[in-house]
Image 1: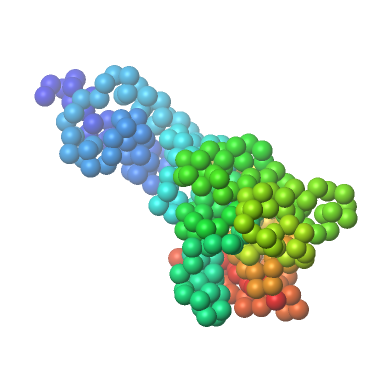
Image 2 (image 1 turned 30 degrees about the vertical axis):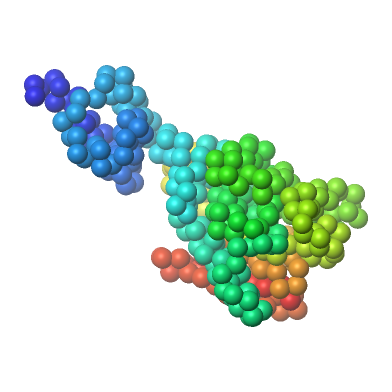
Length: 330
Ligand SMILES: C[S@@+](CC[C@H](N)C(=O)[O-])C[C@H]1O[C@@H](n2cnc3c(N)ncnc32)[C@H](O)[C@@H]1O
């Protein structure tokens, strides 16, 4: 191999990409350089490591080098590749949605465990396919939570809300990609506003209830069956405090949507309304599962008052941070 083709080889390109990202202090720079190369070449890891001498066509080398420059300047890898894996599924991501995080998979785990335990307590088999269940995902973003649950619970119907119309478009495409679009109704609203029984008194259309009813004509207890009609509410709401903004990584602060990050000055401001609305919308024994920010628990757990909520549990993430709060409606 002559020197020129050596410079165009996969090994050389990767080495140069890694060095540029390392010099720019990009976190996980080796992985980022690899993922960008895989993306440009449309190959998997095994292939690139078994063909280190293969020459990269000039157009691909130029594309790779442009992506490396953008990553070095702070754009998240997922915005450059347009995808992120979550719960073993590939999700489209754009700058309009939060990039799904690994810790959010714990929301899915806790929700599935809670449903299984409830089945056990009712004397039914532990494994449920979710038949007849109505589930809401509040602040759905890419749709990752609703879609992962829909794959696990093929009998359940879902409503997924978000304030961001642009995020809902991405979520809709992800639902189609994973063949669950028919069971998830996406609604642009604040939290569960259009679902709360009080919403009707204030003249707001009960669009969310109608959406759920439309999704599950075989569920006779749906709309109008007040006060509660949902079996499970899951949410990973925005929970970063604006006063903490400076502590966020540049990739996050400058490139992820503010509406997905900040919950208010402190961060936990949305939880009060979310818990109050959930109390109205859940059926008796309905389950609420919430992801928390790193310091949210002391402010949020007391909102689950014992006159309304029972079986309160807290699950820590791998770093030992209280990450998921769950409770059951009395
Ligand atoms: C932290 S992101 C979570 C996205 C996704 N569920 C996930 O776990 O990756 C929060 C989402 O809530 C949405 N959001 C923010 N405020 C909202 C509100 N008041 N009502 C409904 N959705 C809201 C944002 O647009 C964003 O998509």
